[in-house]
Image (tube, rainbow, N blue to C red; front, side):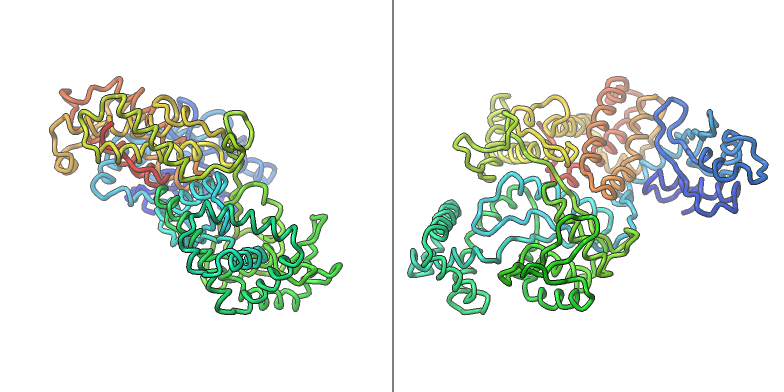
Length: 589
C-alpha cells in the first residue's frame, strides 16, 4: 500500500506496513520480524510499535551497533517512511515507538468514507471462500436455546466474513438421517394409515409424536423390529418410506423457518442425508491409508493424545456423527473448495471436533501447521435461567424459540406504548420498532458476552434502555439521526461541500475510534469473537455521548457542518455494526 495510505481499510495494517519498511532498514538480516503495532493505552500516542525489545533480544551479542532496546526504537522511528498518516513519534522506555496520528489525515479519511461508502473500510482477509456450519437442529425435535445461540453467533460470523469480501457458504447441517427415522416412520404408518394426513400436524404434535414413538420403541420388541426394518427400507430408497421421511422433514422445516424469519437469518440446508452417499468412499480412502482399523467389532481411528478412539462405524455396522462429519468435511474441501470451515456448536462437543479434526489432519486433508485450508470449532456456553440453571419453562420443558422471540417483541411494544409512542406513531411504525428492538435485544444479549461463557437469559436486563444493551445502542443511533434531521441540512449535499475539522479533543477521540472499525471487524473475524464488535459498538456510543456530544454543541455552533458530518460518520458505522450483528437499525425512538 502506498505510504500516503489512500485506502483506509485497517489503519493498524497501514501503520504496520510503514513500520515493516523501517524494520527492514534497521535489521536487514532479521527477516522473520513482523511489525507489532497496537492501539496505545496511555496518553503518549494513538498507536504504539512494540518491536524494539524483541529485535534487541535477537541481535544482542552479534556485534551490533545498538546499545540497548531504546536505541533500536530510536532507529525504527528514524527510518519510518514519510507519511501523511503520522503527525509525530516519540520513543519511550525500552524502545516503544509512540505514534500520534495526523488530525488532517484522520478528518480526510472520514470524509472519504462518507463519500465512497463504508464498504471501502472492509477488512482484507486471506481467505476467499468459507463454510459456516451453524444452527443445525434435529428433524422432529423442537429447536431449543442452544440452537438459538448457534444461529445468532453463526449468522454474525457469516455476516462479518461476507462484509470482508469472503464468499460464505451458510450451511444448515440438520439431523435428518439415522436410525430414529425408522422408529418415526413405522409409528407414522400405524397412527396415520393415510400418510398425507401428516401435513396437518403441528410441530408441537410432532414433538409429542417423537416421544410416543420412542416410548413404543423402548417397550415393544415387535415394534422395535418393524422400526429397524423401516430404516433399511428408507435407506434402500423404497418410495413409500422415502415419502414419509420427506413429510416428517417438511413439518419440522416449517417450524425452523418461523424462527429463521424472525431472526432474519438465511441458511442453505445440507443435512446429514446429503452427505450419507459420500461416506463409504471416504471411509474406504481412510482404510486404504491404514487409518481405520477393526476394534471390538467396530471400525475406529486411533488418535495420539486421546484415551478413546474415534469410532467411524459402530459394531452394528451403522454410521455415526464422526462418519458423517468426515464425509461432510471431505465434500467441503474437495467439492466446494472451501478454505476455512467453521463449526458453531456448544462447547460440550469440543472433544468430538478435536478428534475428527486430528483424523482429517492425519489423512493429509488439512495442513499440520494450521494454515489454509483450516477448520475451527466455535464453541459456546449454556443459556441459563434467572435461577442459574439451564434455561427451561416452569414445567421443565424446553422453551419454544418462536414463543421466546415473540415475548421479547411483545415486551418491547408494551414499553413503547407506555412511553406514549402509540399516540405519535402509526401501528406499522410501532410494530417495526418493536420487532427491531425485541429481536435485536435477544441477539445482542447473547453476542456481547464472550461466547465460551454461559449467560443468563433475562428479559428485564436485555430490554433495559441503560447500559450495554441493544435498546440503549438503538436509542443512541436514533438520537444521532434526530440531531441530523433537526438541523434541516441535506446531509448528502454536506458530504460533498462540508469539511470535517477535529479542533476539539472530543472530536478527535470520536474520529480515532471510528477509524478503528476495520481492524476491529478483522480481529472479530480472525478470532471468531462477535463480542469484540459489540464492545467496539458500545464504546463508540459512550465516546459519542460522553466525549463528543456533551462537550461539542452541534446545531447552531460555528462548527455545525463539521460536527454534523461527524454525527453522520458515527451513524454510518453504527448501522454497519448493527447489520453485522443481525440487528435492524431504528431511526426514531
